[in-house]
Image (cartoon, rainbow, N blue to C red; front, top):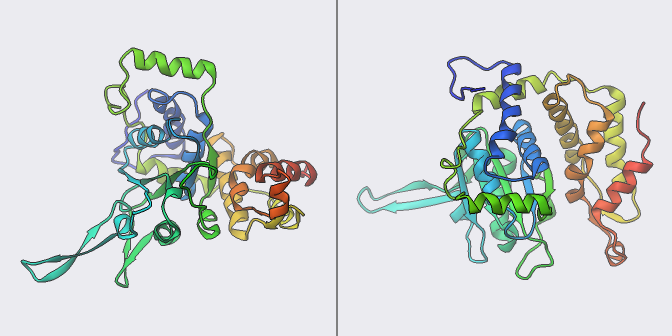
Length: 328
């Protein structure tokens, strides 16, 4: 099935759904496994959110983003975050032109559709904060002048586990701006065998076109999907369940600061998008339960004594998903 990405008419909700259904298969030409990560990235695009990918080096995080950009016919840029990276290296800066004797703005790599912020926690907080305005306001202000970013705009940041040498913890305000935190695990034996088979057959991860990867969706399909998601209903009992889950994180004895109201609205938005991707016009409590860990865990700040006892945000969320009553 061929799905045009540049159409003269606006795609219908059904056409957008078919395009996103084809997306996973297309990305699978380059990336083995990681189906959940692909789904979370698509959800982020539909919800105007951002994604934090955590995993050790060498698990195809960068390849996943490049494959997504190719399959969606979107522009993408990659920034390698290092200790000496400056904020202007991300956002852009004013450059003096000696011929005109004037300053002109040179755009930074943030002016794109998909920004891969690679190893974001290897740069100091000053440079990490350069993304705060762009992630929330979809604009960059330089010398007091706001400059809008393209739509869609999604930051996909990769993060090394904080136990590794040379990492800085992300500020709480920045973590709260990520819709999802997704763990990229090492592949299982069968998946790793398939990866090696592909490389032995000549697969080059730097040449996605040779792998047969092509656009199967585009910005118009994203807009159509967003319009369809706005029609997805979420009943008052499910809304109350979202509220109760988020309030429970604030009352947990292991948590110093729980999920904010931004976290509650993020969980609601993600659940509506997830329901639409699964062909439903309404949200169920199971949608909320499935997404709750990825949406909320990075928003929890644990008490030091709980961390010393080996408590993790994931274990707190697992406990709350069992204890908070689920609406019938």
